[in-house]
Amino acid sequence: MLADNLKLVQKQIADAVARREHKDWLTGGEVTLVAVTKNHPPEVITEALALGVRNIGENRVQEAKHKQEALGKQGTWHLIGHLQSNKARQAVALFDLIESVDSEHLLAAVNKEAERIGKVQDILLQLNIAHEEQKSGLGREDYLALLPRLAAYKNVRLRGLMVIAQKCDDVEETRPVFAAGYRAFARLKEQRPEVDILSMGMSGDYIIAVEEGANCVRVGTALFGQRDYSLKF
Image (cartoon, rainbow, N blue to C red; front, top):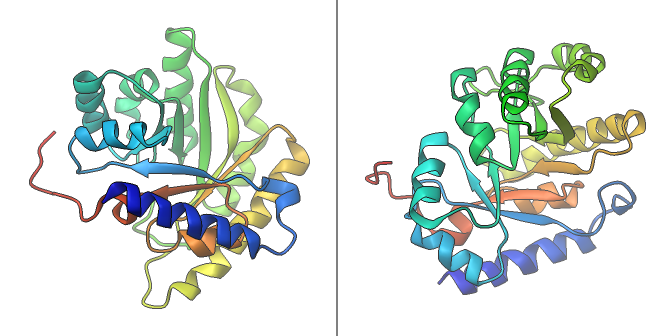
């Protein structure tokens, strides 16, 4: 099942890239597929790695810790869920890229823990473009205020932005959010040419996200099927 699902997702991503309108100059033609294994057993990670998937996404620190203890740390691990600052120490130890940095308070905690172990932690800043109160992410004013202060945090490296669109009955309604995410990334890259990741899109909307310029998508259900919430980690 996973092999067939992976081929389908990869084809849909390639087709979406082909439909882009002059966006490859900024985010490139290659799209990183992050296989999100939240609420799936560790064995699916082994299967995904065997099929050539190199990027693993988890929402929770504790679940990632359990799976890495069971399997060893293979591939590149992305933290895509909300991170509380009191879990920063574990997150820095476990993850190669923390996509969900959504406040300066959290940024400072991540920087502190990275400095403690002599690591430069790759991060994305999560933007709340959809303005949903229940969603994490930096609002526009907080984001713009934070950018000039990043230089003070020597043990984090900003790689780009992460955007989550709103849930809606018509997936086309997500397009303006992803288009705004691309514009924000374009402005950021003008200031910081080294940034290279625009993470947008999940199982329900990754095709539109790629069409709008995403070069990293976070896909779980479309690869692994429905999550098993009876699993305890």
